[in-house]
Length: 178
Image 1 (cartoon, rainbow, N blue to C red):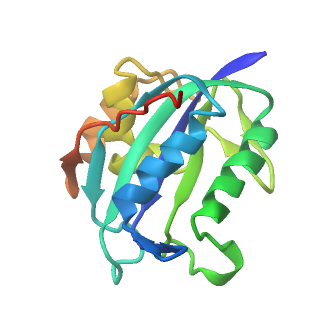
Image 2: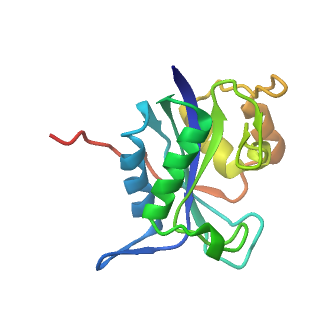
């Protein structure tokens, strides 16, 4: 069964891929290409440059949202996106919490699922405090409602404000390989 999902993507550290250094926006674009093989009817937000939220002594992040339909279960999607993160240099055991990372992909929403487990919490527990995900999420799903309490995310964003979130570039164009 296909489930509508919303993913939040972020990057603030370059990654050495062979002899090529990939900057954070390039990493996001390539991650979107990888996600396009997992999700049908994929939609991409613009990319936003954002100030670090919890650990301030690091470079700014580049953030965006992706939505689409996944044919599988939440933990299956989590395993697949963690492989994509690893492909772009993410090593969870060697990173500081909320610190720099080459690629972070969070499952923000998974249909109307509510999950609380050691590996995964859906909806993402910090979603309503993060303008860096609410701004791009509302760009691609302007009428998205908070399933925990029925409120619209637009109202949440008005409450926290858009401070520290700056437009960087329009959504990437994903071409089908022929």
